[in-house]
Image (cartoon, rainbow over all chains, first blue to last red; front, top):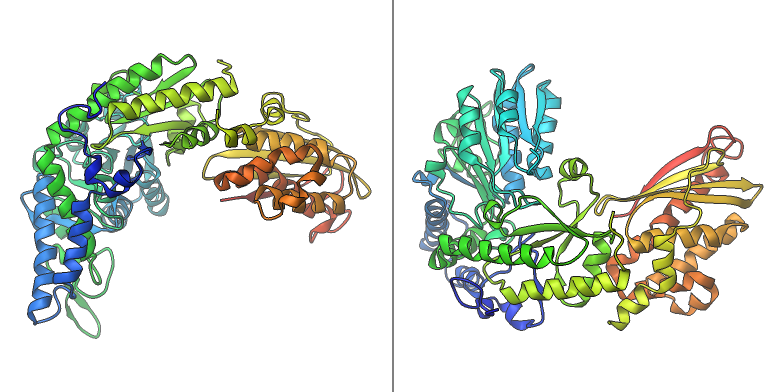
Length: 412
Length: 166
């Protein structure tokens, strides 16, 4: 097998952590990605040339910080396919974005007797905020199940999304299984009854061309650190009319217009939803990550991951006792392969792989409701990104064979 | 094969993982406690029966990785017949060995010394200690806790508590 995989060459030299650890086989990018030098340089350069508090000072340096922050927003919005730059709200990441939607939109738009629909595939971050909103206001909380093939059952979703449904919250791509959902199909079902469709894009934005305006969703949440950017920055793009109808999420500096003794008016978008000093460093770093991804091309990124997943499915299925969860083909998933090996507990597998330098995630992947439905307590998850190669898949397979020899495999 | 893995997954550990001893519920227990690690989903219940100050029977059930399950199994074998104070002291020495803080106690642990290899894997210390924390909680419930002797620990109303390690 070629070391470089598909499309583009070996990118490891661009990633200082990977370059410094040639034996490391990093297969946990669905948890967080490694960072290219370009991102680290952009953050450093921001502090060395433009650091000040944006939107506040009348001096030139504050203007430079304001520009850096604004330019980052514009680049990231364009990357995600949103023409209306100011409808991208920066947050700490997907979790805060989804909490923002549930708190600010949810508490002002969902009432007793209304219905909230989520899916069995959701990460806890797109499950618990809606479950708790439903409990708080007395709304119904419904979960769309998977079909036999492990895909969302859109027939069931159609039946669940009744006239009193106010929101359908779903993931673009399942973090636990890699399943790529039919976003347009889900949006159509939600909009048919006048419900909003909110999409958790934590596992979508890093791997797929999003095209927010064409996708039809009413909100799309994402995390920077899963798409080559730094931790602590992410955002949510929301339709302008929804943002204008929502109360603020947090109060403080930057988000106000006039503060009177008894009342306050709000700043314009996006500032209305960004209280306090913003994470300019994070935004600048994420913009550099987006530039890196644009240079690779998201179609090439996708092709690379499909090729790695296809090869991984092939190699894993050769190993007796391996049970792969989720969609049957690489085309139906992002670069995520979740599996078990006989009755070896995923944590033991993870430890044994770690000794060979292979980093995988073992556990419930913050998706306990899904794990219960699949009747597994935990799985091992290997997830791929732009810097992974066919050789990484070979290392995974070789290490699994050693683990199997050590433990013996008892199937069923 | 890796030497550190050989030390972690010794044959006695693989054997107790595959065929756990005292792996059953106990209807007439004096106390029981759940131990769980919410991060990885490992979950065990430990039951014990006391004859005065002495553990006359002990059992466990649940699911988890090889280290946590074998640790629970070997623990039940090790504590049977011991007094509460002896068990607490054994836990302390066991903890010193698995964390690598007191490797010199390994030889005094009997078959539990097989867990010495865990000290090379700091992320697995919680797995090895999980059942012991549950045991500790069960002992505290029975007589040692605010309920006192004859309180929640009396037969027919076994004391229960829950511990979690994160």
